[in-house]
Amino acid sequence: MRLYRAKDYKDMSRKAANIISAQVIMKPNCVLGLATGSTPIGTYQQLIEWYRKGDLDFSEVHTANLDEYRGLTKDNDQSYYYFMYHNFFKDINIDMANTNIPDGMNPDSAAEAARYDQVIRDLGGVDLQLLGLGHNGHIGFNEPEEAFEKGTHCVDLQPSTIEANKRFFASIDDVPKQAYTMGIKTIMQAKKILLIASGEDKAQILHEALCGPVTPHVPASILQMHNDVTVVADEAALSKFDKFDL
Ligand code: F6R
Image 1 (cartoon, helix red, strand yellow):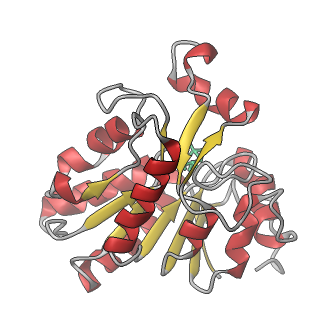
Image 2 (cartoon, rainbow, N blue to C red):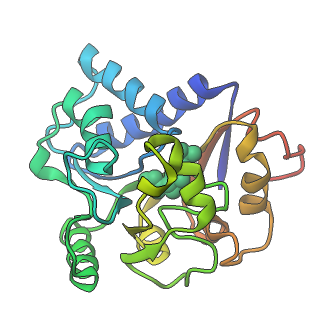
């Protein structure tokens, strides 16, 4: 596991964007696994800036997002499809036909899970998976105590996740209670993983995930078992680390 220490959110975003850029430059037809949430927004903005300067070309890139709320249509402004389109895809030259996100409107959860796993297999797997970290240690929407061996599946979101995400909705009752997510198995099959974290509120869980025991209680702790993980975190998120950690 490699750890890059960033000064602040902006520095974290630039360092993470550099790693994604390197992937796109080295393999123009790569498969990027992407995340939503607050943490990657700056990374996407930096990639857009470099694309506009002419330094990046996404025309052959394919993407597979981690997750999607169940029951939200693509044009719902809280859906992850909407997030990806408005925060990244609309501003780069990616072919929308090459982008993949679980279909939150498929009522048949087993069929949707099988379809999405097949999409990822057909792409030849994910080359670089970008991950944020939930306050409860979740990656994707794999909540604590989820089995490590799952592929894409439908999850019941935990009260703490619903609480954390309510800031984006008119009221807590509007936050979907379920989501489709790549499973831990899917995530662990990515060839490379890039975990990003920013802010004091992630410090405790980041330390537990990277330095504590590997346990389904802290889903991100499984990343300790992957052989190509890069972590980019800012000083605030690293405030529980001492110089002997990692
Ligand atoms: C998003 C995702 C989640 C987030 C996590 C952190 O696609 O899968 O695991 O990465 O909830 O969210 P933020 O970045 O908003 O703190």
